Every structure is written in C-alpha cells, then in structure tokens.
Length: 158
Image (cartoon, rainbow, N blue to C red):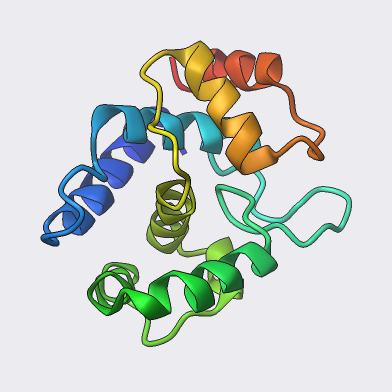
C-alpha cells in the first residue's frame, strides 16, 4: 500500500482509540510516525504479510502470535473498554493472531498497544524513533538495525 493510504488508516484507527477517556494521546503525531516507520521496516508497507523464511510473524507490522497473545492476556484483558474498542475497530468478535495477516486495523491497534505498554515516551525525531523501535519492537536479539529502519522509512514513507 502507499504511504498516504497507510497514514490515513493509522490516523483514523488511532483516533478511534483516542476517543476513550484514558487514551487521548495514543494518536499523537509521534505515534503515527513510529507506526509508519515500524511498518516500513517490518513489511515494506505491507508487501510482506508473513515472515520471510517461515517464521511466525504476521501482518504489516510482522507481529509474532506470542506477542499478540501476551498483549491480549496481560494487557487488554485488564482494560476492558480498550479491548472492546479494538474488537469494534477491527470488526472482529474475538482476538485471533491469524487475523493480523489480513486485518490491517487490528494490526495497527496491536502495534500501538505494544508500544503503549513501554515506559518511555515516543521520540519525535527519526533517529529517536529508530532507537525506540530497536529497543522495544525489534529488541537487542532482533536482526534489524536502526540504520535499516531509517533507510526504510526514507524509502517507503518520505
């Protein structure tokens, strides 16, 4: 998908979450840009919906089912209004990690909640976001690099 279309879907999706009383800032510009960069890095804006090489990651953010299930069990199940809002936004009755592959709104919600669980604020700069993505999404064990993130952001987003 093109970056304008993705930005519109992310902005709309996060805006719906931000309508909840406890989540008015989930759609800040920094969050939108971080999701744009994460999608550019992880799937080249949706080109890859399944992990290359047969790994478990799915969807435009290449989220692993274990991460998805942890978010549901240990975060959303304790935040019922957020859980219900995400189910509504995604148009599903229950959470299933397999839906990440084809349901971009679900993938957006889950990627945002993944970052929402982290203690540090999302940086505004591309350099800061690359470091944030590496630390909190790809992790030190992941193969991705901050330089690769920035290059993919520039290639696919701007």
